[in-house]
Length: 218
Image 1 (cartoon, rainbow, N blue to C red):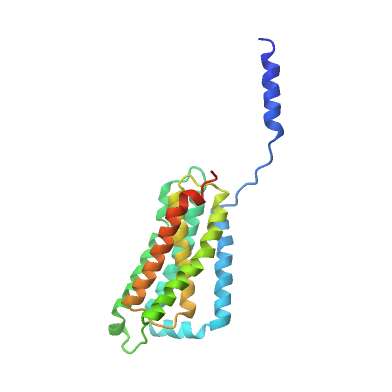
Image 2: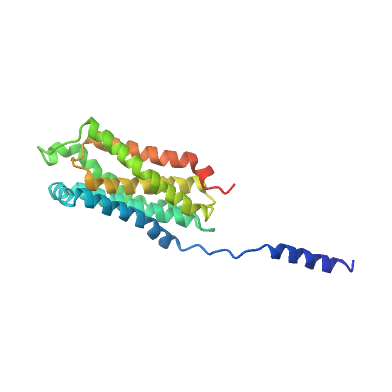
């Protein structure tokens, strides 16, 4: 029995020898700001290529499109923030409701596009090919935005990986939809809005399907 304390001390020494300091994660809002730097960089690149005048003229003629873009941007910020918050131990799942107000503004303002010919007769509406381009734009831009969010969240190892992945998909798709406003030269119609909804749903579903594997360290 006299040999137990030394053996315990030896075990503690062995376990402590290989320990390395763990770098503390930044607060969720600060990691969200870091991710938004990529979104801002993409926005600057698009503005340099297309200019801001076409977007501003379109918004002046149909203000609901401006509100839809603002709603998409708010949704992106809040969804990313909620995803990072869920990576902090002890945070409640209620954080997932954070993007709801922005999403309601986004959906509500976009829904006015179904009445586009009544609100602004003579506006140029998107055809099938233009709607397909919107689909590819949102999905294409969502890939790097989702990849960066997944990479940042893997360090936190969220306890609800699928819910966090859904928020990642929503944040990426919403950010891509807001970026689309810079180069979207057509006023929204029902077919265009349906294409946008399909793109957002595809991005969210893809992230949700792979969430458990991508965000799990095992």
